[in-house]
Length: 456
Image (cartoon, rainbow, N blue to C red; front, side):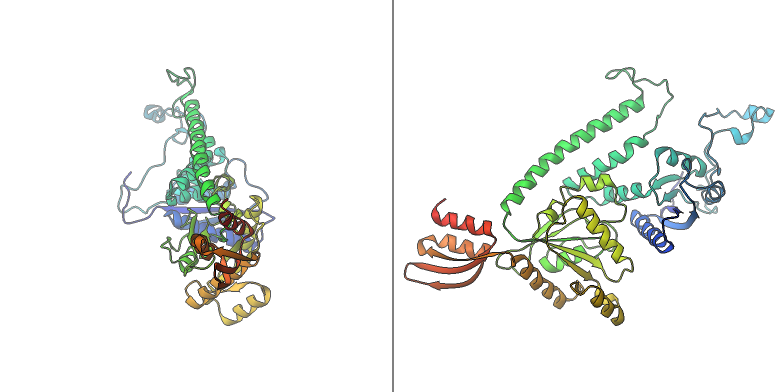
């Protein structure tokens, strides 16, 4: 089957609106799925929605909608028999078997340059069981992905660091394992290790072994990260959390001057980045950019990225970044809070940041100020707004600091320098034998620096 290099793969979206889902919520879910599919690199050419009381256990859709979907993809419109019939043209000619009973792939038309391109993918906005996916593929002749499959594949393509790649591979294997199928007949056997097992059983064993290997590698990486967090212990940290594409990476770049990836697509950033606030502050404050959230974020991905989100758990301030120009930002904000609550990372003080405020009109801006009086309205593109947020972060993360007067002998000039670097020096006076400082810092930082003075 030849690919057309000038066109992206085409996809049809399928969605079932259940009784407990309002029209606006359903429309929002479908619009978000369109963006996910676009991020995956496919063009949505049709959307098919059906209102049902429950999902069909076999193919999700009802019979009529299934045929309508198959007309778009070039499939049969029904689930073929699970017992394959060997194709025999002579038997067909003799009338021993109907042509429709012969199990065969639909005729491909991609080799004909004048034939219309048919969608090769069916994307379903629900989690499918392996049997539902198989049945849909048999009825449509297209590859079927559910919402979880789309998100996992996006994560797979966007992972950059070794940790992120391992985390995504772990989630991907957990998704693929129950969907693996027997390549050969049921009597196929594999010699050697595990003789007597089918090839499918051996493949599943390899997947389990690989998942165990990944968990061991991640545990090693996490121990290293734990060591780095210990070294940073006591250094004030603010974590940027929020829905995917809310502008966290743009804000990270503006606050720290770092060259983090900024892209107008979902899940552009999967790797947690920690950078110091810029211009440098005293004490030094760290800003953490975390992976974005999304509605129905697969549990395996949440579990895989749990250690990455430990940065949010250890922060002194959580900055909830939302796209104020998105009509659905309230639901997105709640999704973020829910996920953080699930991993017990919502204990720190927080600040709601209504980003992209430059994209809303004056009336909407006034309404947002009334609805969210404690929120911080800004645009990551406005240097004045960024400077105001920087000062707000400094005020918030230093609010719980202890204040103490310290006398540092001139012979301990290195400790004095450490106080300037790791604490806020409110006032200092130089006396005959040393420097008297009034300093503000986290209690653990103060104790550590005083220990240096004592020679601990």
